[in-house]
Length: 435
Ligand code: XMP
Image (cartoon, rainbow, N blue to C red):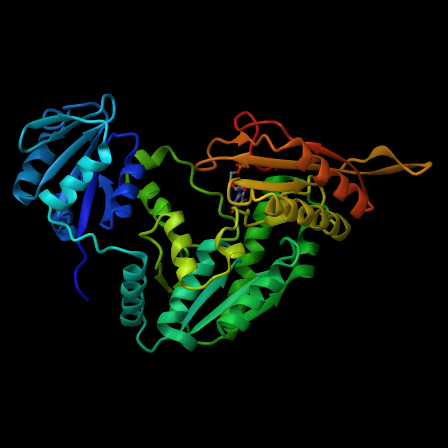
């Protein structure tokens, strides 16, 4: 396999590192971000075509980072220093200072004129490269993948399937807290469209009995997380000797654990994930990609839009959207209300615009009216937020007419609901989920 060209971004405190890396990639050049104190041997292994120092303040380079300066001199590739306090850019090793408002043009000049990059890094090239790499890694061994229906695990599974076909077995655990028709859709896509070996585990009763009577949110998460691992291990054991496990790790997860700027980002709760000490070797084909790149790969591999554009959905699913005790009745109510929300958001063309939009069922009842008679039924809380990374979020100003349609449909179509309210709290002080 030919070695791909790459531009290394060193995190020297610049606030927009990820935007920088994404922009370089959009220009067709693969790029990675690493901490500024990366040792020389690691720097050499990366074999970059050029290095960009992403700095907090202009001209800090050299003074603040004498060690990097000497390493970079030894590496002997073009170096660009970018800072954001004022739009100043320095060709660090050349000592040339430029002030520009057109960062993209300058970046292009650096990539293609200074570093002689070819600009041939595309999603097609990525897929081809990964397929080959996975084949080499796996050989004739067997591979296992825990499918959740989420974007990352779905794209990873299809990519690995393209590489090793029937050597891949996917396990899909239905814990009973999924959205309406989700288990059916996942099975249809993976079995019927891709002919992937899929073990479907109906563990709904098993999970429901475990969470019966539990009201504490963290307790719910713990129980569901633990049970998920048990079920998965039981299924894996039935399959005999398996050497590899596919994980849908993506680049932001990798950055979080390797760079200084990443440490401020909360790692996801990731309940429903698997423990690190499972007896498998890992295949992580998406660990170089940002979320929108994962979506592009998914599209290229033919995954349906509804799967590729899916909003984030918590591992414990509806279990953390039913406030208080979980019962089968409440799950059914919430699933119906949530399906209406989803349908109307899609109809309004807002599915991709909104970070997350969903329904919540609090365990209280209020008085209402139906015809002449009084009702005593549940309210549904509607929540829609926009966010970049789930750390902060702003409630979405949904159009009144859309709110009206959603409210009417829910109270008309879900008999156990007589009221719909809209959560107009941002994060902070609220969180995205109610539990
Ligand atoms: P909060 O509620 O903390 O949510 O503002 C931030 C993001 O994390 C998601 N979330 C979860 N994801 N397991 C997950 O995999 C969980 O237990 C969990 N709890 C919250 C939430 O949907 C939002 O995107």
